[in-house]
Length: 420
Image (cartoon, rainbow, N blue to C red; front, side, top):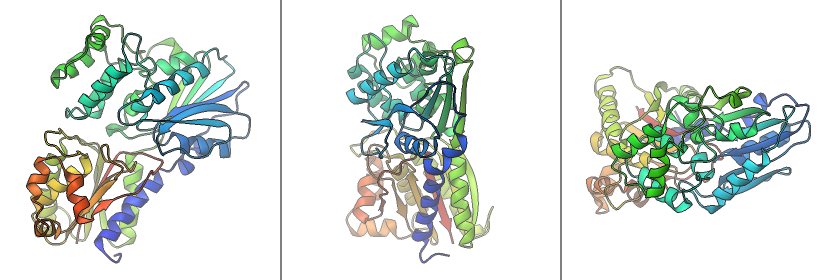
């Protein structure tokens, strides 16, 4: 085993991130050289790094534009890199979306559009339908982010208010061939939920979006309500003939990242168990459940013998009711720690593989058996921090935050519970 449990956990997290790097994942999936032009477009936290990988391995001429999160740009020579805001869209993302639509207009059947999609694209590729303002969409995004809605539910609403998502971008490329390379950051790797599926047909409806808004008690401005109730926001459906010449490949997934982490654990003499790559639910409730499992392993050797590590991915949610900054990974970890109550020989790390947990430029944190005791010694009450949704403040005060900086990829959350 590595020098400390924390070092092993961080090595597994690093391996998970490395496995999803575009430099590894993009080159094997590039399309054939077309008779006409190759236009490269894309959106997401990994899109700039994906564009760089395309440039370095493409044998012929190309041009294009991708949009990524502020701070996530990397140098490209022929593909323009735009930056915009995440998780709440801004005017820069709206302008980039307009320009991307313009780039793919008036193409021929001899042309190929290579679309590079990764997590974060829903915010970065923001182009409201006519009649909906950017301010309306910003307010709705903020409400959805703190509502407790799942990523699938949030993206269903977003698809029906967009001029570019829900298959509309692929429809705009017709009759050109569309090849989408996607890095998945969503539970179940559902193509329509990665960046809200700009090149994928969408079977959900405006009525589905309205039902989600009602479910979470979100008030809508008149402009958005009119779009949804009239059906004017209907997305492009899977059977639409304009999508006949489109193809999507998942080039990196949460499962691949978990398997890379598992390999690091095995090399250190620790048996890994992947519990699932698409776990959802309230972060604090998932933390309680995972604590019960870890205690059974630690105390009873059931269902797994020690040393072992329980690995999982997916995307939990946080319903923000306090004054803290949220962050589903740190909320999970704080709830886990409270439920474990100092259980000996149990350590954990939870982090977002894009380096951003919630709206913070902090990936996550690490937990040890002495975490609660150290907090109390500083006058910090763990339960109060959890009630205030202040996991970030809690772990930062202890010096246990995990900060990676921009990872240039995104395959969702990573959770590892190490039991010695």
